[in-house]
Length: 228
Image (cartoon, rainbow, N blue to C red; front, side):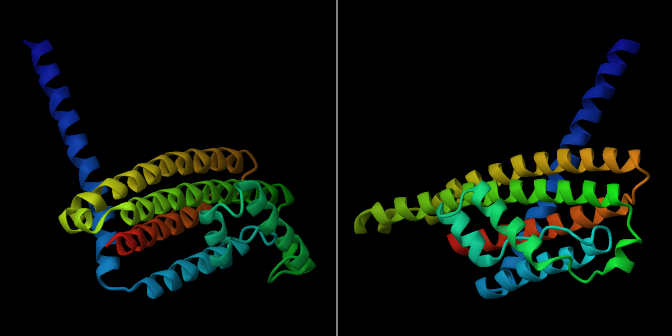
């Protein structure tokens, strides 16, 4: 009897965890839908830029020599395939080095442990490299959707169920975002481990995670707008 009770308990726990996971997933998508309904494409682009600028300013408090994020123009080049991940990373690294440390001087630098600065900078660069990869992948999804729609005849377009067409490509995009979530979590976990070893400030992880979640919701809204 005890064994059966344990099995039932495990089943109920499993169902509860599944429901919780679905609620979290649905909450994220509802947030993206709300953003889409209350903003146009131009406003979404502006908010994505603002979110990137906020992150950069916040990261300066932890690592003054942090690599900058991609510009919208660079992101468009990554999406179109004009810039590879390596080329995009070389571009932002080159410009960051050329501009020197932003909002910092020798006095400010003394506030930061060199090791902590190096660790945060290295992992932020990893995140930007990952970002470039998935921007490129999402760009391919966007290109395929546009190409498929353009190849349809007038009759096919008339009979096309737009909802199913959108769902097809939205499904591809959401799968990529899910893969990206997993990799971001792995990178942040590694960052936490390395910072803990040197007694670094772990609050930077929440700063990065919050910015990532905000940008993800904005980008979901952007793609909903694009496919609508």
